[in-house]
Structure formats: structure tokens, C-alpha cells
Image (cartoon, rainbow, N blue to C red; front, side, top):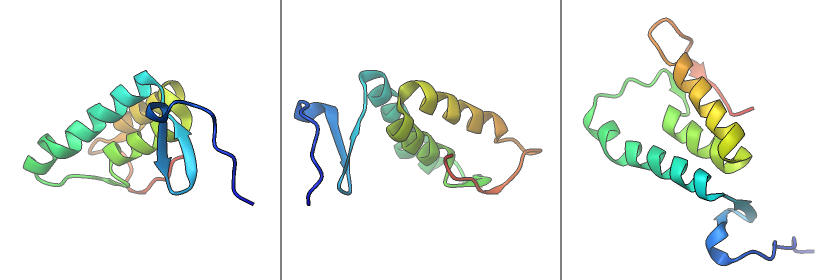
Length: 94
């Protein structure tokens, strides 16, 4: 049986696979900032990512999953942990 889709305007829906993710305006702005980082400075600078997935991919997934408030806080927390004396390795979104 197919899953029901929310009755929202098409511009408010973001589709990833078959699950609908609703992203607010603030969430869309945060995602645009992270995408801008991926497209711009991240391609010019040498790779220096300590975590997998990268901080920008983590931020995009966190905001898509939890919204601008909690997702934004998770992304900020991740950025604060990203320093030479911090950890490294696989760090999934909780």
C-alpha cells in the first residue's frame, strides 16, 4: 500500500527517495549556505575533513531530518568539534 503524501504545496516538499521531507524557509537558507560551501570554497581548498560525512553534508542531512532549529544546532556542534585536537572518523547524525 503506498504511503500517503502530505497535502502541502509542491514548493514546500523535498523528496529524497520515497519519503517526503518538509523544509522550512530557515532550513532552506541553511541548506543553501551549506551547498554554497560545497560548490565554492570547499572545491578550491585542499581536503582537510576529519569526519565522515563531511561537515557540510552532515549539516544538510541534519537540517533536512530535524529542521532548522535542532538540525542547525547539531551542525554547529559538529563544526565546533572539527579542530586539530578533536576526534575523527565516522560520525553519523543521531
